[in-house]
Length: 129
Image (cartoon, rainbow, N blue to C red; front, side):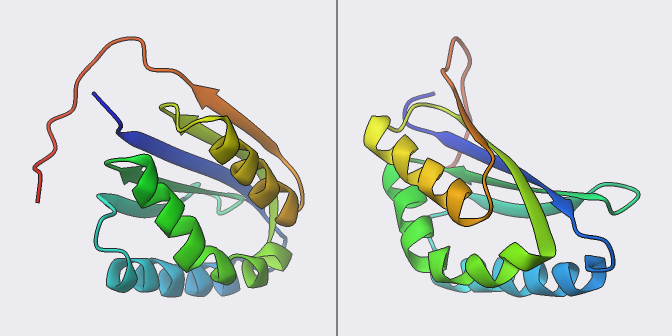
């Protein structure tokens, strides 16, 4: 599977802020699509009752994820008052220095855990473009 990284974060939606958060995340997703051509996928999911939000993105390499944090990073702080940030799960190993940057992101959004999941076995069929 090489350098592919799958990123997932999870947050609780603050009471009464769901519609504002939905609008902010739609705007962020549109921004990412326009400004990050290397990202494979970027998706925002809400639980059925609207109490939690998960953001999942797939990157072909750590450079794509680093670029995402650089380009979209300034868009994250205004979202922080709308959520209670809980966790980041990263599937793939980008290196210790980068994991520390993710921990800083989690802290900036109000805390939460960062867990790295090492690849054991598998493959990906992603078209190179």
